[in-house]
Image (cartoon, rainbow, N blue to C red; front, top):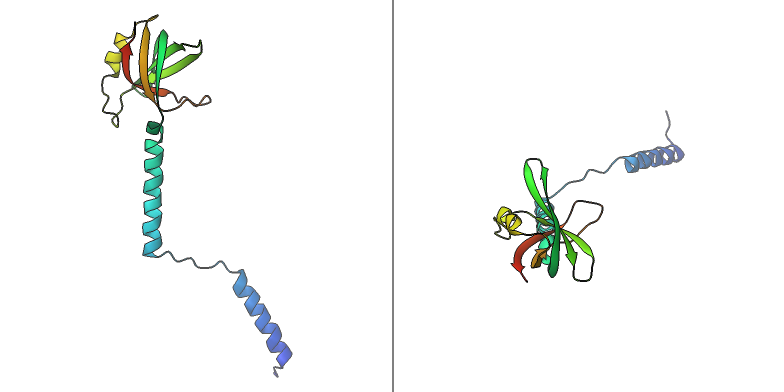
Length: 141
């Protein structure tokens, strides 16, 4: 069989097209894995500490209190009325990062229709069950 230059040209083009259509073989170096690990650690720390960057102090009147149990964990919800008449819900849970382990004592000490100064961290997301967490409470009147 005689092979001419046209045959060789056609064969080479087919071979090149077939080589291009294959999925490339990705190789991950140790450096890329280390960078990826560092990025994941930074993202997890940011998500974990993000609510702690938003701190606020409010003067509120306690309207109601409620205990909510989720997976054998108690969440103390405190319904308040702000000075300007708006209502706001706070949660009162223990926080390892804040070294706060007295949420039951704080909840038990709150009296309805009394005014308090509340220091809280976090932010409220209306569609989820995310509330600002109370850190300290001090009676005003």
